[in-house]
Image (cartoon, rainbow over all chains, first blue to last red; front, side, top):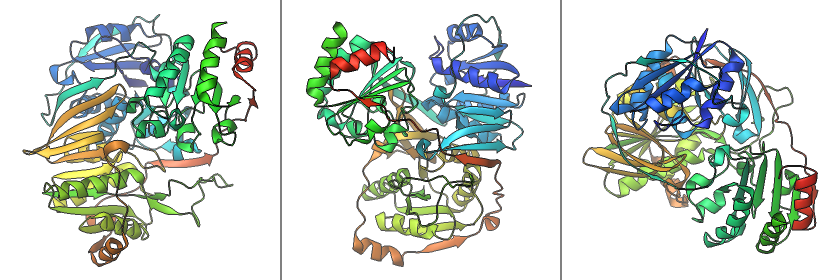
Length: 311
Length: 249
């Protein structure tokens, strides 16, 4: 039995989500192959070959794969899938875009965002924003799976020495084309893989006030996140959103500032190891999941916290 | 041009779902049902494209039990022109729904299909992508901005690093993200008008689609509960706890 993992990469480096996905593949068992599909992605393919536990890297390199458009990526993936028992991708925005398309091309019902493997055909996945966990058994010959990265501890990025094999990409479908990208530049760790996350909610009051959280995030070397309310209010960009429809995070420490704790937000962070809540409303639902709560005005507590951390 | 919007009936966004004691699913008896919020955004977007003169007719479709008619009536009240229900009591999974929608697209020949990016019940996030695959059409998932002109759709998508814009040849499939628009409130006169609009009823067999589920749900359980911790009086006490008790900093 061999499994194929679709690597998340930027043509140069392999993203950490790939390491969590390889870990999920290991739980299923079998030879693990990793597909690096991109353009001028030799560096990424080399990095994938170093991942612990990977038996082979398939490298498809073509201009039409450079921006990871779903039409071309899925055509490639569905073609390669025939040789595998399982095809896995991380449940990132790229994985979620490509994988269902590849599954449908292969007449398979994808299993979305698994958080545990029970057996090679049975998986656990959250439904209803994580308010229930379903165990599902697939009857498809090839299992197409997206992996919730917080459910699996990443394998080591080095230690492996897999062979890299070139594979041919199908011709450009010509259905879609890349126009542009606005990527938020940040010196901070990436939200989904950060050890510490500092998030602000509606209680921050304005985008300007989010600056108050910066010294705290600096001190903790944290990524910054936000609740949907704060994003909808235009305080911060959409890619900061933590929750059911945003990013799912599970850092060692999650600091929720001025976040009430709507179900949809909790769905995105409740697997964090330690949760801290700072909120002036002592009845806020966030306190029901927080390990440590401070009831108080965030505009006083946060600067005090920064001072205490300096000591 | 014609637009098709797909809507799903789900447990209302504000209902706290309860897992059934026998572990077979979640409690749906006597629970408020509504249109999937992402689908509401899809209907709204189609209506705005019609108001802008881009779309000429909006067909709202749904698949599921007879009560999905109510969901379609809501879509008609927002501004869809007519509706089609593929009625079945069978459990429908995303691949089956995509096949039903493909059959409807072949029947209706829309230039644009808009769907929610995911339903808030099964959180699958698949149907739009699968439909695009089966039709051989381009797709733009997680849309936060849609512009249609000169035979193509230019769509800004919410992706992990920020925003990405792609251009699609028409016909195409678009799935909506939260910030695409804010759906309008449905007014009473529009609800009355919606009652008079056409609602066609079909069966999966009539469309030649096998909807047999590929995934068997073995059990549904509540996730492990997180216990509430302690309240600490101030920042100083908090840092002390984080350093010495949780040992996380």
